[in-house]
Amino acid sequence: MTKEQARTLAEPIVKAVVDSIADKKYQDILLYAGFKDDGISLDMLQEIVEGFLEANELPCIDKYGVDCPFCPAYVPSYDSYNQLEVYIGEDRQDFSVDYDLTTNGDINDLTLQMDFVVENDGTIKAFVMDAHVL
Image (cartoon, rainbow, N blue to C red):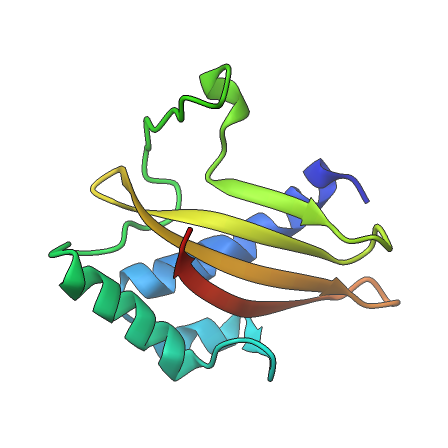
């Protein structure tokens, strides 16, 4: 599987999870993704996000796809930065993603991490693994 194929598979799921966070409808995340024993729980995710917003005096997390003009100095061109970064596993089947969360269109330093497992029948299982400051 290529990064672009993985991005195409992951994007609608990541969008649904990020939009659920933005709407503060954390229970809805379970409609799109699960939680593994070696990752965080739904309650922990809510605590992390809400605690981060409060500690940084931020009003909200943006929905997926809000325009973000961020261009890090280490990226040679704006086109090469993407809020949704894909990492393909060694087996070239499973993959992980990082999604840089934003507030009012600005990167807020909180990153959502998810794992994706592609089953033999082609179905995809998504898991929220973490949300943390990079």
